[in-house]
Image 1 (cartoon, rainbow, N blue to C red):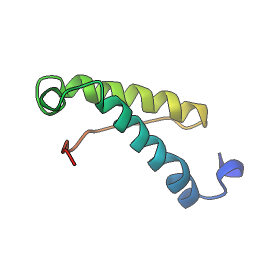
Image 2 (cartoon, rainbow, N blue to C red):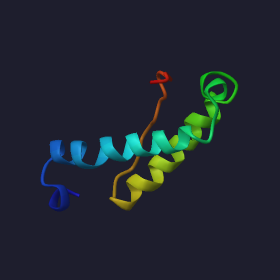
Image 3 (cartoon, rainbow, N blue to C red):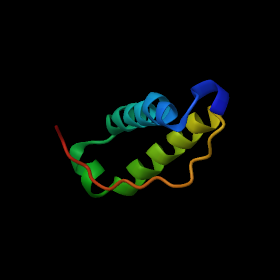
Image 4 (spheres, one colour):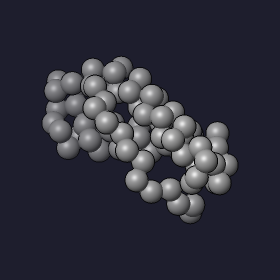
Length: 74
């Protein structure tokens, strides 16, 4: 990881944030607004967490924890 990304800021800005945004965005389309904010929020959080863990493991990184803090439409 260190050789590939050459620093934590580059890794964070070049991989972690874009991968997280992409996975949250694509997973959100599997749920309606009402589901993502209430009845299926736990399923939504679990789905995102699993996909992030898979994506991160491809780069040799272990996802320790993912928490969905806020859901809002924009």
